[in-house]
Length: 403
Image (cartoon, rainbow, N blue to C red; front, side, top):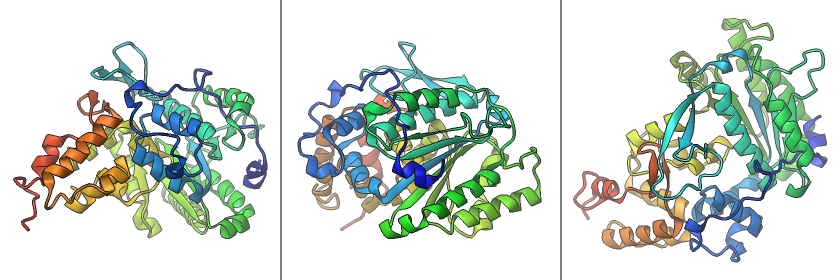
């Protein structure tokens, strides 16, 4: 099915993972009034409650509401090559034995541990999350695996579409998504071949994109260096991959490489693509690794699941490019708090002259939102560590500015 056909109509929406609409979390009941829909233009109350059930803050929901119409479609290339069987993936298991990577509604104080699993298991959890997100939020999304289960019939059970219809009409697509993602990983990593297919699809909707001013987000979830269809790598294969990427970049796209491995050779390969492409490349590691990077640079941030999932599905904000690269400046810290908590922090006192009042405003916002599971402490914590924030930016801290 082409992009143009899938934009017009598709069966592919996905019902809830537990076949029920998610309930709103009691912990955040007073965080904000969903009846005030003006702040969430384009989202209905059910969609807002769904995002709240995933731990999204008022500010993040406002930002998503303002941003999500900028993209006409999302495309996931899902690596199901044989190397995805390797057992160096990670899952978060909570005290009650449940993996709450999808709905993070554990009670305050509950502890989780990181459990080893296959890379494919980890990616399945990721795809489940974004399948549900696309269906609930009606975000048109195509998921396509790299290796079809039957190479003689490559279009059978190798892709599924989500988010073009009402959530209630998604049973058939949910079953298809389960079928596609249940296959055992096997085969090579022929990314260039799939990028050429995406380029053809982009060409078929180029006029629509130009008229609407929208983009297409492409998320490439992979654990390996690109190969050809026979599994070979090398300089020629890399050049073919780069050429295919450059052809895709001729269209209005945002490309993210979501890596499913800690292999340094693979990480360095994708981090070095910007030199070959002569353009910035967004490379994202898994949740726990990204959380560790953020903690090194900005230890006052609780890098909770909603932040990582936003980055995975293509929500782009300049601060997301910075939080795992360097310490935020005072102004950037204020902007980050506003991104999390919305107007309450945009209108907060100036921390340069009213630090204590700024902290009090932050406390009020965090109390309203409730805690989130912290991947560094592996327990539920507030979104912002105030003592660390005070040390970094307060008047007695090393980052203070004397007025």
